[in-house]
Structure formats: structure tokens, C-alpha cells
Amino acid sequence: MYNLKPKLLAVALLGAGLGTLVLPAQAAAIQEQVKVTSATHLGADEAAAISSAAAQVLRHVAEARAALHRKDGESARTQLGKVDRLLEIIGAALPTATVKDRIWVAKRHLEYEDSEQVLPDLIPIYSSLDEIQDLVPVQQAREHIDKAKQRLQKGDKQAADEELRAGDAALVYTEVDLPLQRTRNRIEAARTALDKGDSQAADTALQQAEDSVVYLSVSVDAPMARARESLWQATRDFTAGAVDSVRRDLAEADRYLHHAAQSMDETTRNTANHLVEELQAVKERLETGGSTVADSLSRLWEESAALAERAESYVDTGWQRLTYQPLGKDDLVEARLHVHFARIDQFTSHDSRQAGSELESALGYLDEAERHVAKTHRDEVKRLRGEVQQLMARVGDVGKSGIPVAQDYDRTIEQMSGLIRTL
Image (cartoon, rainbow, N blue to C red; front, side, top):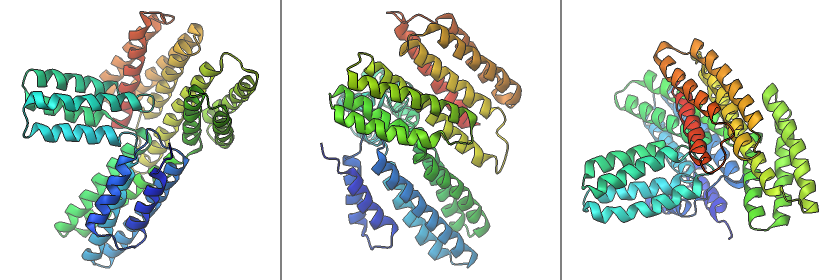
């Protein structure tokens, strides 16, 4: 299908960010178009558009700060209005946009419909979760939707609403959602400070917003993030039998991985070089009709996804260090990477020995994290360590009883991600 989203997103950006007059109704129409055509992953066009939008947000935030220093609060508010429109457009481009819209509809229906009438709203929510489950951790969100269903069946609308809210909050497309929400919060804080006549507090909030936007601009178009998307597309094209498209996808991924291999970070550099070698082997098997192409593509994508997530966490950590030292966060990021790799080894490569080795490495990093994190988080790190030990006890269990093991991996990774975001 011809994808309209990049063009519509570009049109929306032109209207929202380059000074063109856009009436509220027109802006709403553009926004609705972007939402309707929302894709399940960020392609190169979408990533470039989001990166461009983030750059425009930076420009408007800088203009707002300049206006504050001129004591021109009205001009600052005008610039913040432009930022709002750009952030809405970025949010509409995310894989989570559709399911979040559907959750919003169900919540709104709860305000004036009976519980039984709202139950059908959950069907498209489940469908949307299935569509994005390879891109976004959805297990916790699905559990909350399951609970919402149970509450609706019992006629408890208030509890159902709480579960829907929790399901919405659990949906995070890491590379964009987190800095986007932080930026929104800081922009709103700046607006509140302006309303109170506190220009200094408004400027401080906008300075913090700039940090989040820079992270957004950098992470979404980073080489490993782009390699992940190209390899994701390669797995889909291979399943569809579109071999020529797979060749193009792999060529793109190869280019991005070579860029990642130039990283100053040793882990990124070494793993990217390893992925380049794996990718070359996949290319050769693709031409000779090898039977392991599908599994090899899956492994490539899963490894690149784990590395991209790691890189995004470190970009975020780097900005945090400008204001404070997030003790233990680095250790948790590394522990999560090794749990990711263990899952890949156990369920994609079927290499139990290597999976056990990766989990051992994860435990080592969790030990370091426990020593470094604040006391308020040590119990949570201990609990995560216990979960990794339980995974080690079940290494090699990939048969019928292995299904819950895979879910346990996913749950542990999600919980690690939650703690990383908290620090």
C-alpha cells in the first residue's frame, strides 16, 4: 500500500513550524490525517520528519526564551503555541498513536454508556496491541486491558477507567515517547510560570525542555535506530516473499550498521561489527536459498533493537548528567542488554549455553547496580536479580512449557526499563 504518512507529516510540519498561517480547523484536519495514516513503525521518512520537527521545536523554544529575556511574555506564549502543534504532530506519528486513540475512545464512552456497551471498544484495542507488539513492550498494557474487561463485565466503570488509564500509560515507544512527554511537561510548566508572572521559572522549564528535545532529535535518527527499522522491514518483506525488497532493506541496514561501527562506545562498535558480519552471511543465504534466512533475520532485528534501546538510554543518561549523576543507571542498562541477548539466544538461536552466559553477565551488572543505586531503589534491584536467577534456572526450557518463560523474559525486561526510566 502506498504510504501517505510521510507526505502528510511533512505538510503538517510546514503548517505548524515554518510560519505559515494555519487556522485551528485546518490544524485539526492535518492532525487527524496524520493519525489516520499512522504506521506501526518509524520508517526513514517518518524518522527524518520527526527529527526535523524536533529541530523546529528547538527553534521555537529558543525564540520563547529570547522573548522572556526581552520581557515579552505574549511573544513567548505565541512560540509555545507553535511548539504545542509540533509536539502533537510528532506524537501522532508514533506506533502507539492508534491504540492510544482507541483507549481514549473507550474512556470517553465510559462517561455516558453502560459497561456492556463499552466492552466492544476493547476489540480494536487488542488488535492494535497485536500490531505493535514486536516494536513496543505491550504485555503490561495488555494485562491492564484484560483487567478493564473484567471490571466492565462486573459493571465497575470506575475501576475499568483506572485500568484503561494504566494501560495507556504502559505504552511507551521508548525512543520518542519519553522525551516527548518530558518536553510536554516542561512546556506546560513554562506556561504555568508565565501565567504567574515568573519569567525565571518559565525560562528554567524551557531550558529543561530543550534538553529533552535534543535527545528526541538525536535518538530517533541514530544509526542503530535506523538499522533496527531497516531490519524490521526486512523481516516483514521476507515473510511476504518480496526478496527484492529484502535486498534493499539489508543494504540500508548494512549502511547504518557501518555508521554504528564507528561509535566511540566499545560495546556498540564491537556488536555493530558483529552484526555486519551476520548480515553479510544472511545476504549470501538469501541468494542461495538457505533455509535459515528467517531465523537469521529475526536474530539480526532483535539484536539491533536491544542495542538501539541501550543507545537511547545512554543518550538520555548523558543529558541527565548535566544536572545530576543517575547512580546505577548505567549498570541497569547493561543488565537489560544482556537479558535481551539471553532471550534471543534461548528462543531465536536455541543456544541455551550462551543464554546462561548472558544471564550471568546480567547478574553481575545487577550486583553493581545494587551497590550504586539510591537506597529507595535497592529492593527493586534485588527483586530484579531474583527474577534473572529464576530465568537462569529455566534456561533451555523452549518447548511447550517455554511459553511462560518467554513472557517472564519480557516482563523482566519491561520492569528493568521502568526502573531505568525512574532513575
